[in-house]
Length: 139
Image (cartoon, rainbow, N blue to C red; front, side):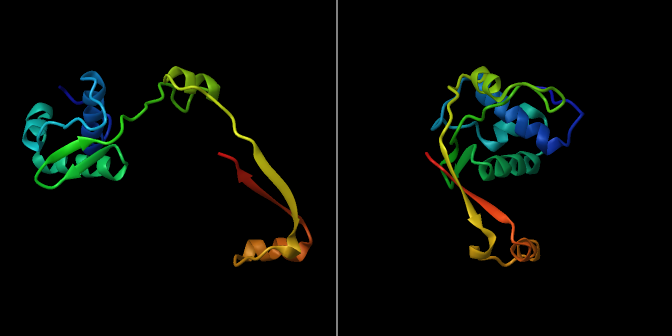
């Protein structure tokens, strides 16, 4: 697999690993090839593969088990549209095969004098007598 030159090498390897997961239809719990197989496949150094795998572990995509290997924790969803195009959030959710839904949010107005705070901006709001809106997401 050839890597393009438009991004830093580590990012390109991460994206190539994610593409490999999708192309080979790997599922959570499946084991990735070894580090040596990956660096040979991508034509990069072992340290680049290790750093890329570590980043994917930190992002929650992979799970690394000492002496056992690297396993897929979750298959990442890639939204096809870039930030330069405006598309409905609902359309994007449907495009990746998920079902869009909404949750009721409980919102209430709280007099600013009843709020506890520690920041300078919040203290200015308290002094002004403004109202503060508090919310709670219902899951």
